[in-house]
Image 1: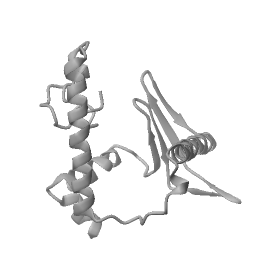
Image 2: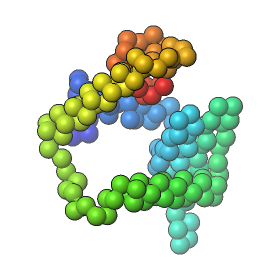
Image 3: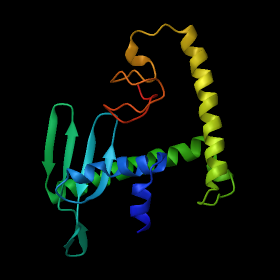
Length: 169
């Protein structure tokens, strides 16, 4: 029931929850993992299957410009592990680059109203900085302008073509 209430919420959160599972309606199998790059994606299909001393997915799907290919259970497992290792390396590198091992461990939970207010202030500062930069830099075409990436949505709106938001170009 809590999940359904979150999905039905008529607000930004509800929209985000619905977008996060939109793929479910077109996938034949439930997804265990979906790894997304800028234009390519890897979907690992469940449910997991007992494979002796381990478990394997039922398969996977790679989608990239000019490529759509299905993976068998062993290929899907191997590629999923490689992607997870790359993610782990990237996160560890980020932690080291930003000295996060030296900081006290934070609580996982957030005070949503306060955290959202602070996040929106960071976004507003980022917009101001990038707006000033854009005013001094020549833009080669409209696709580099926020809100004009794939469609003619107004600036600040989610792009209907890619649903990544106005600043992803």
